[in-house]
Figure 1 (cartoon, rainbow, N blue to C red):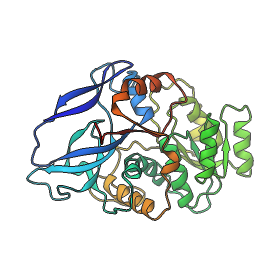
Figure 2: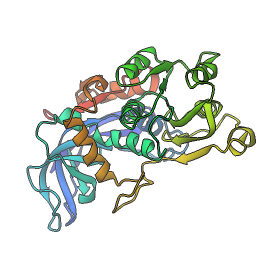
Figure 3: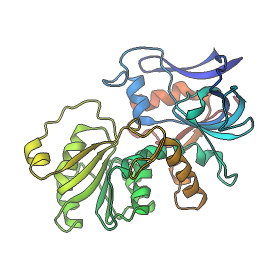
Figure 4: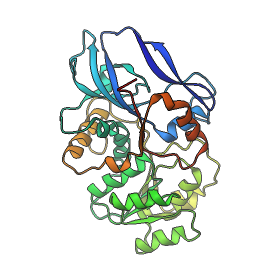
Length: 334
């Protein structure tokens, strides 16, 4: 069986290739994809061979966030059946994905569109970063970086009872969208009085709980400058290059600030417990919240494109800082 697949064949180069679909093992699921979502930060780091991204080893294939229909299941698979619509975690940007059964989650509610469902896995990463802050009702919160994870983090902070919620990003259109999705304030971190603006809306105390999503060390330093006494910072973005000096005594140790690693792999594998939910449980919770109208996906979708256009799309991702964050590949007519 053959499948179309987007492959990073060299630095700064993506191609749509035809590849063989591997034989199905007893614990695996074959899914025909409808949509896969581009994770801008992770995929740019990989196609550009940035530090801490797997290095200069090509070819590479990504696409960890998508939705499709089950075509075939292995002999030991019991959690999904042929015909089920499923979220596909850590598959590829690929027409037909083969993944272990633990990496698919059934979409039970037919009222949820497949386009909305395609974003649930990346949304779960934003939720994981918020959960680890152990937020309490009425605490101030900030999101540094308004890409996909940041936009979902703003919404989860709102649902968690944070106030005020501050959104920070260089892009004015993203700041405007964050305000529509639940932020109370949106500031430009390049402004010279950014820290003063943040402290003014938190009544001089600084931010209690911050989700740092940029992965930029300068933004991490700003998050520390904005943090309250005994504040918490969830490190959701992948800071691949540490090129900004931090005074750990003055900014972390003495004020008692907690830095919390929030990589998505650091999750319980089997059973959820407070502030640390499994991947499957978070995805199911988000699906329920979308169905209930409490989480918005549609405003985050920037464009739906053909996999045939992947070379142009990834050239733009590499070169254009204003790359549309909600970019989705539509595999239905491939």
